[in-house]
Image (cartoon, rainbow, N blue to C red; front, top):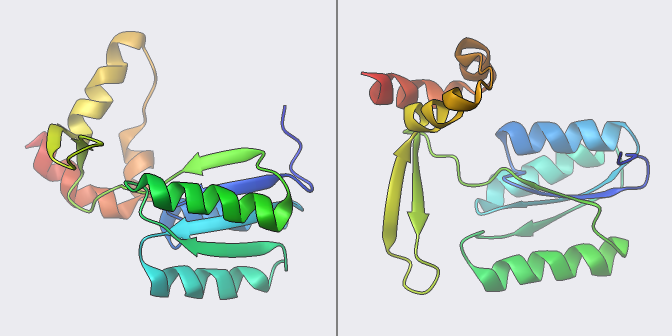
Length: 150
């Protein structure tokens, strides 16, 4: 089991939402955090707010669909803290609840899946998913869920 004090977490989507919440949780328990996000202004604001909790936070503007950006993110984490103990990929959730798969070479969309389809994938494995709890924790998914379930 990973012990949080002094462990380094690299969190994509760290400018807001679940990624931002995890960064706060991690720092509050003595960990070190590298937050990354494609949106520079919310990322910088999140970093400033997290610095109130701990000086052990840094940020990198990163588009997770770019391998060069991801390499830059990893290099920054290692240069700053010497290691990476946890990668938490929270980037890429869309406000419409639609998840896209793109070709790494061309960037073209090769597949689409709604939140309803994601949930349906887990049902055969009897994974309990409390949708109301998920949607209350992630209000930005509600509009997409209603659209996908309709």
